[in-house]
Length: 395
Image (cartoon, rainbow, N blue to C red; front, side, top):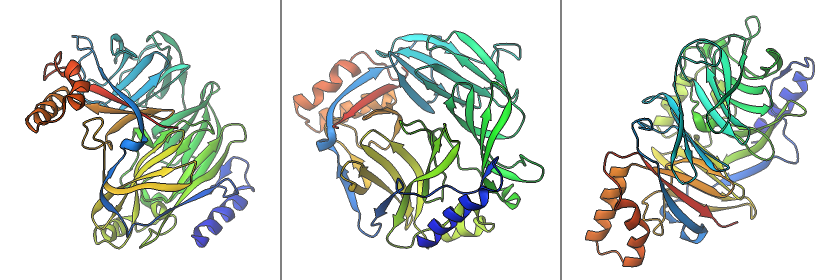
């Protein structure tokens, strides 16, 4: 841990030579260390005591709103924005009660049009869709009305998060960004189509390795965008005003921790094999930060462990193989697709929910326990759109 912190600090000092580059995150008094005793876990952890309330939102099924998969859910004001990247390849907008509002789909290459969705994000200002093939960002309001678009200089961008109006933090993999140098993060002023800053050099020898980035690896927070990677023990925070990357949290595993800078190692393929041989505990990149809690997982001894960290008390609430809740009749709450404040949104296929309800009836579950699902499943068909389970946690 001391060596990793020293490397971070030295990286920040070296970056000061070039105002357009920051090579490592800043570690300061705001950086928190989360200690994980990966040698002491439980099979199950019940989070009933954390839940204040829960509800189910069936997403309306129409010919225009058929979903094949859900990659991300954004609960914004009185809207629920759903991103289906691989099946419908569209963005769907529902009311907060699940009524279908609009659908954003590929339509072309002209102004206000896109032919593919690389990534989608949504916040109170609207919806941002990035078309990597056309190298442009398109912005829509929460009713699906097109507002504006930005052309972005071509570089391989696998994910993004808006940090200011018309400005985006991009994750870059497998391509040089400045001469022969490569950088993982790029702060880009899309409105002016110009660079603001580079972060974290990437070794060109990694150009053929797999990229471990999905929708959850960029998250908005009150302190600014949060970014993290597979194999890396650091959760990064990006300050939009100062354009600085800092270490927000460092995961400190008690037994067999992964080496610092794991993802940068030239021998990453060999180290991945070492993980399979149980030589390291590694951050598994399922991470969610709520107002008062952190949810994340790690891989150790071929097991996928789940952790809940209480931010107020600065202690671990759960370190288990599975996180369960009897209140919601859900066997595991690791399947979240979205979040807001102290709220989790979990996707449940209609057929799965119907089957679970029937199973609980056969098991003789109490009427009180079954009542939360009766009114939902009674109106469902097995091929309907998914149902969102909304879990509100205590503050």
